[in-house]
Length: 267
Image (cartoon, rainbow, N blue to C red; front, side):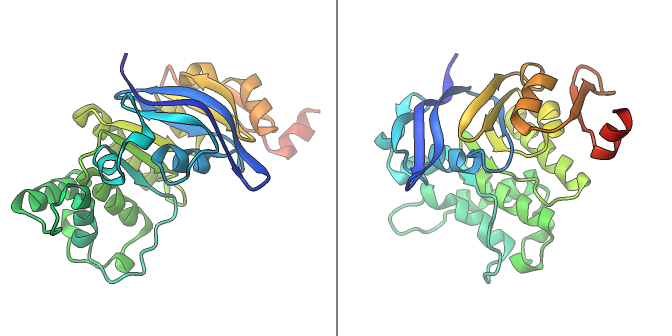
């Protein structure tokens, strides 16, 4: 099986603070791979490191069979797109202009877009359902619309791998499902490997092919949702009372938090 990303003994620190501790894992090509875990577990740092934004202190990352450092920044951007958790929108660009920025890794020396670049941008906007927003300024959009714009920009890069850091954070339920369905379509229809961070273990159960559960910079569990989302493993990672049963949708884990008032009542 061909691997999109391989991490071997990946270690990272900010000064004396160790954030990633000897992480080794592989992500198959075409996988929907979701990283979960409590706050401060190193999820965002992991995404920045495997995207090349942060340089690891130790270990190595392979992208499609080649060490990351063998790629130029432009070459890496042609095969891998990164959508950060917090994206500034207070700049005077329209939606169409932002999406078209995704073509930058493919432009020539003069940096001028050609007809094909505009066609790909239009296709990316159509795929993400934002074609009617093209002339709107970014600061005029809702949170869900902003997320879809930056996903469209990532798609415009024509990457083989897309990395997303909590793309559903602060979105309502409808927009969360819309973003997740969009990622599922990207995987199924275009064969793109999707790697994302999520705080929502139930969304991870519904969409993830494989889950990586982290705590304090280490891997707690790695495997299918059924292997990772068990009571014992989740209680160890999150340190709270919860229930794990089968979702009414069938064949999926459902995780329910148990509030303190119910724990006291049971005891």
